Image (cartoon, rainbow, N blue to C red):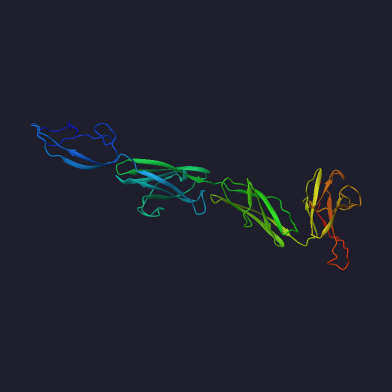
Length: 361
């Protein structure tokens, strides 16, 4: 019992200021139901009846939990122009919720009221999940903080922070040099990419193997021109594509694939060709004077260099210092095969020549 120090001895109203955070003895008082009993006595020390009151004490802000950011379908991050949904489970079992605000100034400069009435992006009315749809207008990349503040009807408040993951950086992807034309029905496509938040890479719809910032996949080819397209997407839905073309000719007798037209060459180079499966030999010639004089790769006039070994591919080395500097170099190759099964003459030389345009050395 606590004495009321302010009262009228002739009767009337007495007052007692009560700090609801503590009991009269100074110990902490918990939130919830409390019963107040009041009694009085007169100058003859005769006690009257006790009056009781049931009161509810609430000195604590609303509880905020299960903060969630819902990104657009198929994304786990957002980018500029996306609309996201921010929601949280908010309860106050004593005083009740008066307001819930979302400070989204880091996302678009605005502050919003969050609702639990089935509007503004809220899915179900009255389920204590307060929600708000927010459009992202900033171009940042990384975690961007927002703040949710809930206030009950007694003015108690609580705030929590959450973050939205943003990625406004477009991926970069490239394709390494391909072999074209080719006589092979499949080709390994390789390349590199730059993307910290990779979602997927597809090469002509195929999922490649990924190692660090590199990818690789074998792509089947159809006869003729083949478009090779690489598609990359990050977790925020940013995309990029790049493409190249491979010409597949299973009947191509012989094609030079290295070096390229108009290459600028120095030192020892490798000349590489592709030829039909039936090829047994490939002959190489080189001319420093635009086809007037032809030399072997060893520098002998009127001679050819022959490759009999396909184990490492049809390829030979040439030291560009043998015949001197020139801007009029040409390379010529022949393929040789025995085709008794398909021709009336038992031994036939395939004299088809692939003569590249000028190659600078």
